[in-house]
Length: 470
Image (cartoon, rainbow, N blue to C red; front, side):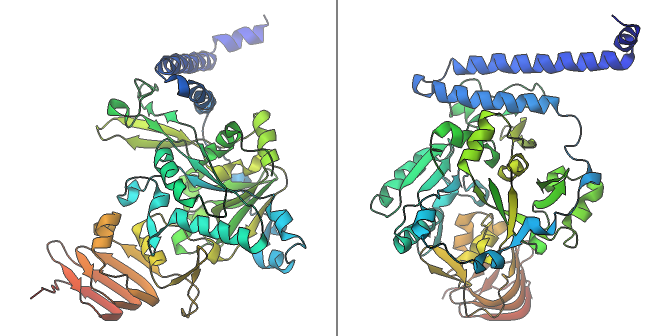
């Protein structure tokens, strides 16, 4: 052994490195042991799937233990080259190929269907929330693809990535689409164990999903789609296009495209050092954000998966269970994988292709007359003078869908609305019209009932206003 090696081994830094490595190995070995114990409690029909899930979790946990410091060096962040984000209109000018059906028959539409509507107070899959005329999000998706298939005599399938939270309810509802011109396939994303923040061991005591284990499991973010899709066996046919759109005030926290070490890369706000958050939010430097509408080559997914070359940053998501236990969930984001693919591209699409519904404020917009529905697609009403959507901010009394629906006898006319803020105990009668900027604030203990047929234009309503039946 060399003198240099001896000096290094005997230095305090070397001792610390060795200690940290031993600790990391201890955590990893303890985790593996606990996972094997859990597998012994799996039903025979679920054992193979659970073992595959755990193999993916072990890789993620290994990388989590190896992580040291921030995943990015801010000094390397550059604006993406101009030609790396193509305007949608330029692509549109190329027109459709001569044989549209042949091109469409190489396409599969994959929808993330693992989320519950719990953030809006609903039970069951978020995709089963009614949006318009008793049509759910899933109904609209099926109608869109069916319209595409009928229009071009194509056979585009719909593939749903369910989770253990949504699979059973989704499969029941899929029976209603038996006679629709859409083939529907499903597969389940992985089921990972939540990790006790102190011990770094699984919270689960067995593979069950009820009782003390009801909160012990989680679906590990949409970045899991690559592994789960590969494991599903559905990737028999089909490198990475990301739809982006211009930022508005509501989107400043959304992930954006950057150039980093010569490659196009998604940058999420969670990766940004605190000193640079304002710079990240600036629409001057970062003008676009990721809509999470992605076009991905299935053979490329297979190639990267086989080579174990899918590189996605780990998102450490802290949660507190109902009993007060602090846990962490290790997740990944689907767009973060773009740096692993060759020939990636961003397409700057019009805002009309991005219509997220994450809160009841978003739900109010899509339920209103701002949008017209045609073949499952929601488009901005031609009656609206400005193509931008109003800024809507509903208070905590509207957070749950059940409460939200009770507070509107009918959805207001919002064609001429620019901004709406509602706070406190507020209800809306039938056929209310909102125009310009409307702010309605009921202070604690007060209640405001907006009467049927009321027209509010550039108004601030506060205090107490009760409409009583007589």
